[in-house]
Image 1 (cartoon, helix red, strand yellow):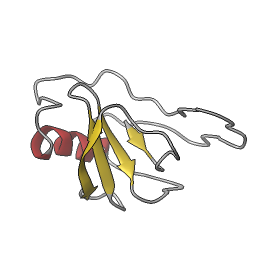
Image 2 (cartoon, helix red, strand yellow; image 1 turned 135 degrees about the vertical axis):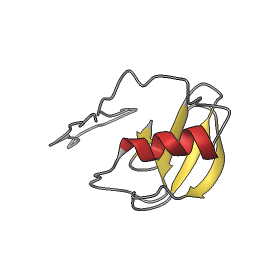
Image 3 (cartoon, helix red, strand yellow; image 1 turned 180 degrees about the horizontal axis):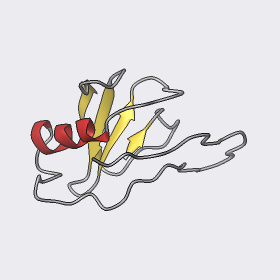
Image 4 (tube, helix red, strand yellow; image 1 turned 180 degrees about the vertical axis):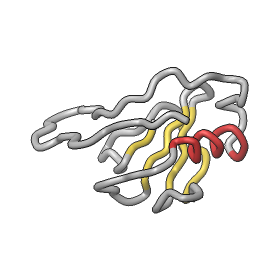
Length: 101
């Protein structure tokens, strides 16, 4: 999962295992959370718009942050959305697409 902002008083599954991680070709730094099954990248400061190569995160998850994602696993879903805990006014996605090569 990719969180473009750090949700106030909420957290992704598991624990923050790595802080201030940089992903080649992706702006900003990320805190990496995992519970051994799910891996989440949380932006250390709010990112309003993001264009990136998802493979950069996958490579990071399978090489640098081992133990959660194996290179023998398959990616089967890509989606954009929100994890809404309260409110949600004004949230929108104006453009979301994936190019698979």
